[in-house]
Structures are given as structure tokens and as C-alpha cells.
Image 1 (cartoon, rainbow, N blue to C red):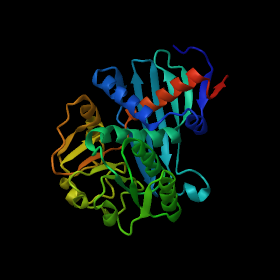
Image 2: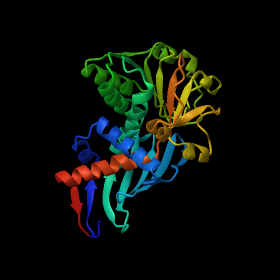
Image 3: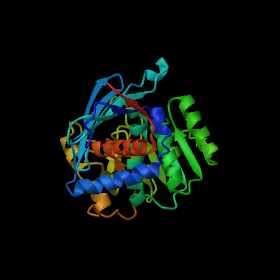
Image 4: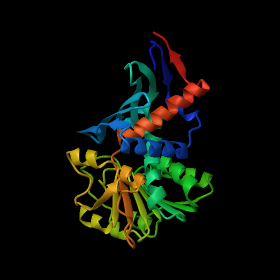
Length: 320
């Protein structure tokens, strides 16, 4: 129980230095999903605003019986790179669940990138082809890099294909893949990237004015798509080409003002997938994990980071 006035500060740089792998975070998320299913972790639906200009503001809240409260606020501002700033910025408060006292302030950029890829990894463990060797990226920003890092540890990847609006981001992602020993190429069109890919990751700017340009019918029957962008780039009239669609949280999706999916064939959510109560993957048709991000993911990643930092003496203690 935390009762003192001091608290731990973990910057994004300090978080990176904790040496937490995507697998570590994915394992923590799976543990949290089981805790939620057993009634030991309590979460609120994600709150989000799209005020225009491609900006996206969101917050999450979760409390666990293991003694933590985690509150996160993050803003995505696509014009920030022109200002010399990261596109994603925010902060996470970790508090004591018994006293309400502040326990830690944690940078949100690293947590958001890694937990998003870890959520995809949890789904991919169950829905993607274990022999997947080709991955396609639509969108080449932070989430593309974090998913590449996660999936390169999970699958015997040999090739990446990438499509993105910004030349610098596109070249940066391809170079990161080459540094891993992978064949990396920029695809001429989204269709060229998706055709024959084993895994697809889409992470375009969260802007509903974007005209959908991806067709699920381009995917091979064994493909798996990690859709991190509210399904914005996917043509809704062809989404039923997916035989299995998992969302991150049914309750959150039901409460959302604008549903990600235009049809009612959701096979389950991430808790159901991990606990074995979701419908089996449909044979002969691609599968997708379409998600907004959930409080549980932020909770699992932030608590893991704080516990690691406290155990190793990382970060900075702030006294009043």
C-alpha cells in the first residue's frame, strides 16, 4: 500500500531502458484478461474525441484487485512531426487502489506503442499462421515499427511490404526491417501489398474523412489482419470477406458512438479469445483483430513497467 507523498517518474526514455520485450507485455495482457474474466480487474470503456484535423484524444481507466489504478490520456496530433514533436503524446498516472495516492507518473508514448502491438500479438498467437513469413503494412508510423518488432519475434518473417504517405516514414520502416535481415520493399499499391501476405497491419491516421481503399477480398484465406485504425481504410461493403473478426472488448464496442464494423458477425472479443469462449476461426477465410485499444492494455503495460522499475531502482523519485 502506497501512503507517502513521493512518487516515481518514468519518462519514455526510462521505459525503453527497462528492457521489457513485446512478449513480456503480451504475457502481462493475457494475465490481465484472465483477471478481468474472473472479476479481479475492472475497466471502463475507452473515452475518445475526434475534434478534427486528424487529431484524436483518448483516455482509459482501470483498477485491479492487485492494488493499482491506471489512468491514461493520449493525444494523436498528425501535424506534430512538422513541429519537431512526436505525433503521439500523453501521460499515465498509476495510483494506489487502496489509498488513491499517486504512485507513479509514466510517459504514455512508449506504453501506447508497445501495448498496441502486444494486443495484436495476443490475437495473432491464436489467429495467425505460425509459419507466416510475409507481412504487409498500410501506414508506416509508430505502430508499424512496434508491430514489426513484436511480430518479428513471433513469426519466421522473411519479407515486409509497405505502403505509406510519408516517404521518410516509409523508408525508415523498410530500413528497420533490413536491419533485421528481412527483405523490405515499398509496394506500388495497397492491393499489391495485401495480395499473398500472411499478416497485414493497418495503422492509418484516425480521420473519418479518408475514403476507404482496402478490400478484404484481396487477402489470402489464411491471412490475419491486425486493424489498429478503427477500420477506417477498409471498404465496409467487403468486410464480410473476413470469416472471423475479434474486437478488443464487446462492451466498449457496444458503447461506442461509431461502430468499427458495419455488420454483426463479431466472433468474440479478446477476453473470450484468451479464455477459449470465442467462436473458432472460420476455415478457408481470413481473420481480423479490429480494435480501438482498451484500458486493460494500458493497465497491464503500465503496472508491469512500474513493478520492473521499482524492483530495479529505475526512474526518478519525486518528492513534494
